[in-house]
Image (cartoon, rainbow over all chains, first blue to last red):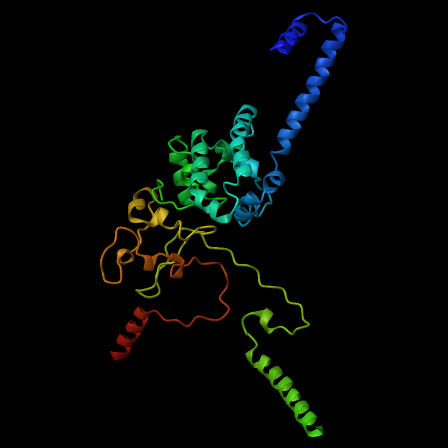
Length: 194
Length: 157
C-alpha cells in the first residue's frame, strides 16, 4: 500500500528534473512507437499465415477452403481467413479481436485439438459465425460483394430472383442462404432453410 | 540348364510380343491419352464446362431420372447435410420454386411414406447428374421409344 502512495505522490506532482518539452515530445514519440507496435502486432495476427500456424485451422477449415471458389477460381481474386472472419473497419475489428481471446483460451486448453473434438464442436462453432454474420448484416461478405454493384441481369435467373427481392429489401442477409460456402457444413438438423 | 534358359528367353519374348499386340488391340479409341505411345506427349482434352441454363431437358425414356440443369460445385451430400434438399425438399419448394423430388423418394422399400427423403434415395447424384458442353466422342444411336412405336405403326399400314 505504501508504494502505491509513493507512486501517486510522484505522479501527481510537476516534474522536477525533466523539461515540459522533453516530456511532451517523449510522450509523443513513445506513443507512436507503442501504437505502431500494437497495430503491427494486430495486423500480424490478421493474416492467413498466422491462422494456419495452428494445426486446428490448417488441417480442418483451411483444407476445406481450398477447393472452394473463395480460394481457387478463374480470376485469382481470393479471400483469406480474416477477410471473412474479421471486420475490416477498426472499431468492429477491435471488438472481434477481443472476442477472439476465447479462441486463445481454446488453443491453450485444446478444445478442438483433435479431429474428433473439432467435429463435435463444429455445429457450435458454425452457429457462432452464422449468428455473428447475421447480427452485422454479413459485413465481411460485403467487404467485397457490394450490393450496389450487383447486376441482376448478369446473374442466373434464380439468383436474380432471390437477390432482387429478399436481399434488396433487407429481409434477408447473405448468410441466411449462403451457409457452408467456404467450409463443410455441420449436421444441419433443425437449421432454418435446410 | 541351357534348355531352361532357352525356354525362359522364348517365354519372355512371347510375353513381350503379345503384350504389344494386346495394347494395340485394347488401345482406347476415345481417349487420346490412352491411345498415345509411351514416348509421345499428348495434350489432355479441354475440361468441359457445366451447363447451367436452368432449362428442363426432355427425358429420353419415361423412367429417366431428370437431369440437373444447374451448377452443383461444392454441393455437399453427406451424413451431415444434403444441399439438394435445401431447395428440392417438399417443405422448401414454395420458397425456392424448385421442382419437388418425386413422391417415390419418400417411400421406403415396403412402400411406406416417410416424413423425409428415404435413406435409399438420399444420394441424389447417383441418378441425377448435371451435363457439360462436351462434344460426344461417339455417335449416339439411341432411338426414342415413341419414335419406334410410330415407325412400327407406319410399317404395319
